[in-house]
Image 1 (tube, helix red, strand yellow):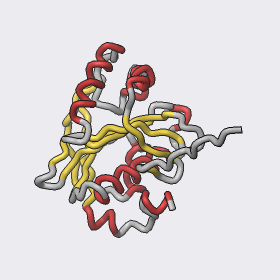
Image 2 (tube, one colour):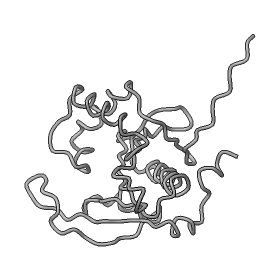
Image 3 (spheres, helix red, strand yellow):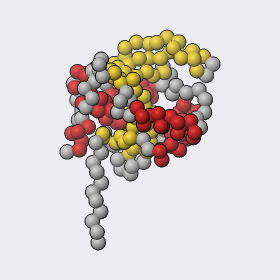
Image 4 (cartoon, helix red, strand yellow):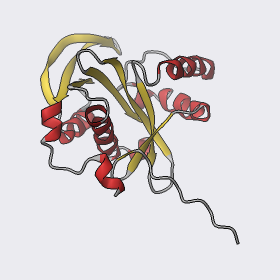
Length: 197
């Protein structure tokens, strides 16, 4: 009987999820998630996404990965199931800033804390590995579930961008939230690297 190699410990992880780079094999999941009307209502999307469009986006993303953006797939630690995606964009190394985008695509897993767990892992990466000073995100005011998750992770409301987005026949307010390095450092939770020990 041959010994199976040990499963590698994820580099970027939370308590229940880990983050890995996207692969071409993830494209069908992304298309399925993004073409769901409820899921896309929380995102800056207005039209359906095709497989070909997502393949083009994937090629562009791979070219920018590790430069001005970092895109990851959120997977469950227990069974490696991909459940969503998140990442950093507009990474500004001079000023230490980056924007964050996140979506849990598997709707049956909404409200279980996986998004918060994944966000915490991404914050640890940005502040603890990239030396960022500030990370920010935007959330539609009607997305109460996401807002609760961001509050749990420690984000601070900076302000409201009034009527900033036109979607579904009306203008919507968008809340701008951020976290600073010292706020992250003061959080009373284990960091990603503590979870692998």
